Length: 111
Image 1 (spheres, rainbow, N blue to C red):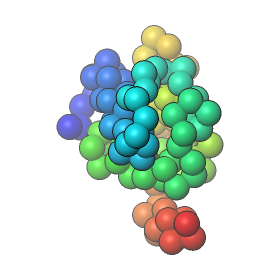
Image 2 (cartoon, rainbow, N blue to C red):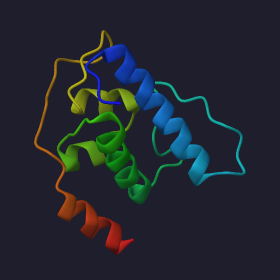
Image 3 (cartoon, rainbow, N blue to C red):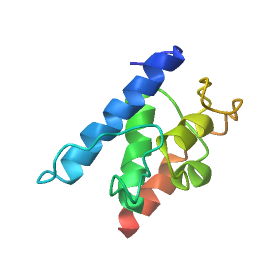
């Protein structure tokens, strides 16, 4: 679904997050995911879930970010900023290097 439309990218990220949270916590009610949702506290995404999220963002949205920064993002809004998506709610773009697949594989292997 690669697109440069920031509204579509924002909507797609929130939908992707909603699906991931539902997959990870199938017994819970579907969360309301907003740009201000806290990834760990509100959505229950631990470090392994964040790695999965970054892989899905790259695969489904065609967006990449520096992995250390992206793994440290606390909210979807921070993720959008790190992914270089400019919206009225995010700061100027900070497009970074591609996520290293070998590093992500190493992180996944440790969990």
